[in-house]
Length: 63
Ligand SMILES: [Zn+2]
Image (cartoon, rainbow, N blue to C red; front, side, top):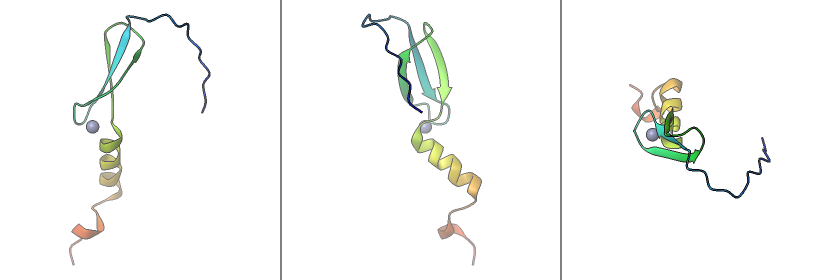
């Protein structure tokens, strides 16, 4: 997945903020729609969520 989007060297005041929906940490700020806050998930929380869906970690298994 490589994108070659060469934007002009002009700085845009329109920034989109990306916040982690799980821990509330700011993940990213990128040019986009003005003052828009987008929710995503940070790598750390993503890993946690994935682990949750896979079931409990082996160390916490009963017996
Ligand atoms: Zn997070």
